[in-house]
Image 1: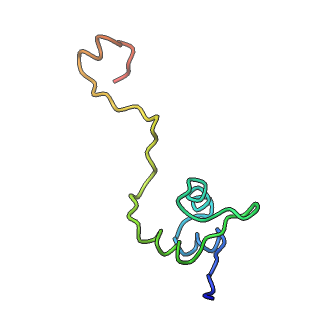
Image 2: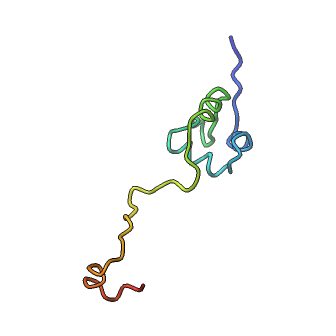
Image 3: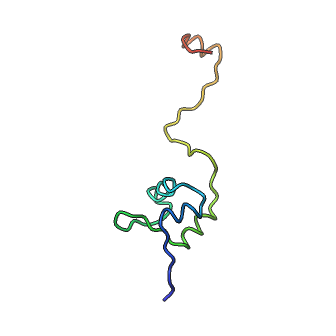
Length: 84
């Protein structure tokens, strides 16, 4: 039977170059690891697959983000209290 290398959140964070908080977020989103009691465990093979996935750098976008509105003379006429 093959031995599976299991990692803690802290160990995975070091390998990924992320904070443990961010690795836990990936776990809570279902993108990484499994829950074992109160702790998350991550297999080495799962971590290797996760590292190969393309991720965009920077802050994740929010579904509730409002789109930017270009300031035009029509917008100013509708809302004159908007600062320039």
